[in-house]
Image 1 (cartoon, rainbow, N blue to C red):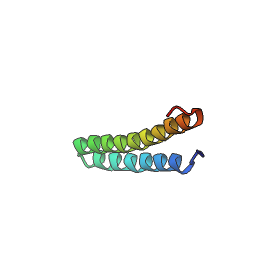
Image 2: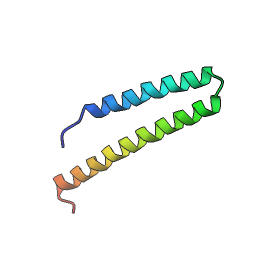
Image 3: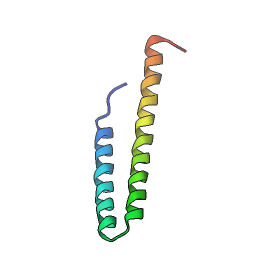
Image 4: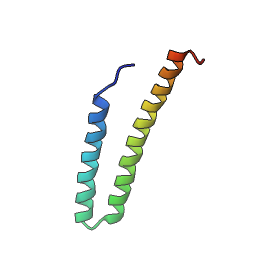
Length: 67
């Protein structure tokens, strides 16, 4: 299992986009939509990280032969 640096850039990109969307919605007076946009961005990143952690545990099982 090699470490994929593009995952870091994906998380950072999602963070930047969500920050811009949050700021735009908050400036427009749509605080509730800004809140939900932040939650959706967090969930997307959380799912990405959960997949990476799952892959890590599978790799640990493979290395130590815990089938």
